[in-house]
Length: 306
Image 1 (spheres, rainbow, N blue to C red):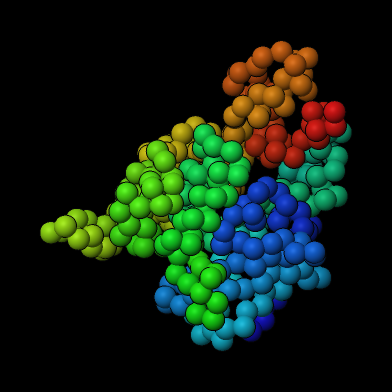
Image 2: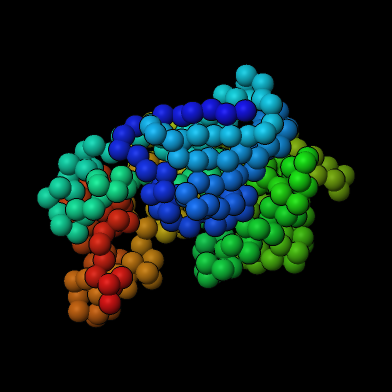
């Protein structure tokens, strides 16, 4: 089955795919030579499918060998639209960048969209996996999580979807810590899954019912950034950096994900490599208002040119 999805111009699939490292995390596979990718998804119907996303003239081409019902077709279309931000409008951001040489490339390269996983739950878990570790560690943990708890693709059981909240809620902490090796993140991931799926312990067995935390509703909730940030900070394992990163993925760009890398970039750009802190990073992009996160993300950093 094939579907063609239009994107609000300007759009570049390669730019979105390479906007950050998410495409390197299971259950993504890719990017391919033309900067498309494959992804395994467990649908709400319980079926597990794989689909390929490739570039098309006015958007993307989505192909799956699995025949889909009308409802499943709509679910895949909505998932890909969210993952690539096909309906997002960056015209105001582009207008602002035309006056900044360090962002002169942004409009030409159709930058602005950040690749996302299909669900906010998956994005939150993966963001937690980025904290206090190397990128190699994040990739390993994501892969182990998928291989251990993800539902397999019927025609290729070696490929699996990202585990649903219900699947992770039924996991035990020992497996998350020792088999998947999530370390201190294990209880955070387990509690998040249980809050979303509604897992409770009954007579020693984990039972899953409806959850009290509707993360997916947050994707479309019309909320001020500060309120959404406060919601994110209630999730154990999500601190200021993780919250700012997730806000970026959710289309809220009025904060900067400040970490040690941001300190290095800002120090090299404006402070002659002298030590800087959060205040200096925030000050560097304060004038960008609602776009400060994107201005930071796509800045033509001098540090990269050394």
